[in-house]
Structures are given as C-alpha cells and as structure tokens.
Length: 331
Image (cartoon, rainbow, N blue to C red; front, top):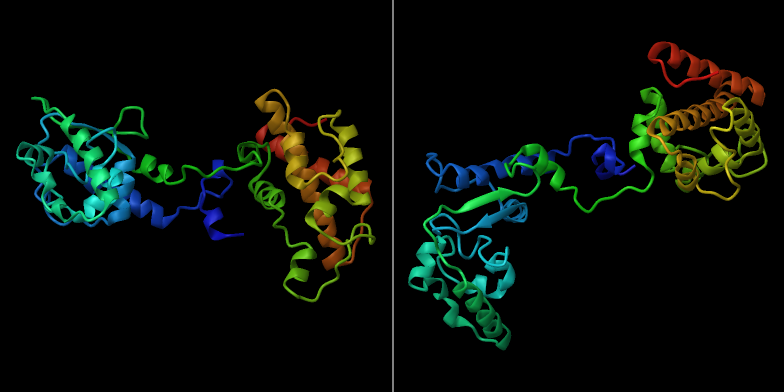
C-alpha cells in the first residue's frame, strides 16, 4: 500500500494518518493570514517562513475584496476578476519591478507598469492590453480591504480546513464511510480496507515478487489464489456465503460470479437506510475475515474446518460484539 494513500483522510479511502508535509503547510498559512488580519504584529513586513507553494495555496484558498488598496498587492494578490495578475499574465509578472507594493501605491501613478517596457513579443503585448483593461476597472473606496477564507462557513482561516483543502480533487470509489462506520471492531475494518483494495497477502502477491510459495488456493485446492477468488468465488467460500445469507435472512447475497471485490462491496451495500448498510457491512466483514482466518489455519496450522464450522465462528464473533456494543443485531 502506498504511503500517500495511507495518509489520506478516511473519507477519501485512507487511514487518516497525518501527512506532516501537508499539515506543516497548513500551519504556515497562518503567517499569511495574520499578515492580512493583524498587520500591527511586529514580524509583519519581514521575511516569512513560507515558500511559493504556500503562497499559491493561500491565494487559491482566499477571496480578496479590494477597498482602499492599502493592503492588497496588485501583482501578487488577487486583484481583478478574483485572479492575481501574475496568473493572468505570468510572463509580465517576471518583467515587473517592485512586486510587493500595495494596490494603492501601484495604481496612483501607474507604477505597476515599471519594468514592462522590456516586453519583446506579441503575446506579452496582448497580455499587457488585457491586464491594463482589468486594472483600469479597479476603483478604490474608503473601506478597508477584506479577505475571506473559502473553506469555512464563517470565512475565517483554520489549520484543519487548510489541511483538508490540500486533498481537493482526490476521490474514492469503494464507499469508505460505510466501511469505517460498520458494526465491527477495528481489526475487521482494517482487514476489509485492505480487502476492497486487493492488498491482502494472498499467493498472487508473493508470486509477483518472485517469492517461493504455493500458488494454489488452500480452501479449494483448484484455482490460483487471489483475494478475489479466496473471499468471493472459491467453491468453499460460496458455501459459506450461502450459509450466511440464510442465517442473515437475505440481508446479504452470495457474491456474483465474475464480480470484482469493489463491485461486490458496493453492490452489497445498496440498502436504503444507514443502519441497514452498517449491518450489512458487518456481515460482509465478519464473513470475509473468517474465510481469511480459515485459509491461514490451513496454511500455518495444518487444520481444516467445514463451512458450517466457519459459520459458527462468524456467529460467535458477531454475538460477542453484540453483547459488548449492542450491534450488529444477530439472531
């Protein structure tokens, strides 16, 4: 499992392990926020411990409303059309001088154009015309410049929202919310998290690494062992699933032949209510977990049990959890 995936929030398919790089960046944005909101702090105007990536994230995460122009930066800030001139015309930004002056300082004498006389291409001249028109549309008022944080309801920066914003665009397809809210204990959830991503150390994984192992499924002794075969399509597993289906009152169904693990997981959790999904997820987890344990008993202990014995072990584990937590409800 890639460490970057482990560090994703649980709702995005990870384990929620803190990504120190992203968290550090989220904390560093506090300097930029207070530079705006509390300009009287003694360190304002000095060299802040932030880099270009930090600044880009900050400007992406904020909305600036220009008032008197005494705080906004005309070139580095989001001056026009909710965009920064450096993003509208990046080639001109490289040519400009004194980039850190405020909007008021730059607009009063059109000093923002200093350095742009070095333009030497048609594209740069076209960008200059676009930028000129946009800057001429900026009208200063008597009000203070305002900045709003995008990722919170009240528009105020928080380290939590800055951290979570860095995961925008990442998605997960296997319904991790149901997995982590299932009526099951932690080891079953972690096992299922590995299972739905096919990261169990079944025989196909050592084979891919050229490690010596027996590639045949230990439950049926017929097919090549993969996580999908072991937990869904093995004849032994199908017998266990049929027994669990009967015992659960058709809460779950026998896996469809040919379905992938993710398809099986998502299709089995189509119940209309949240509690029914959590209950169904528990049946799936405990059944797959005990199939895995049965496989390991045969590999490491040389012991084999019949499908009815595996069903009994599933019942015992779920009943134990019910007595401790009151869920899942079992007959």
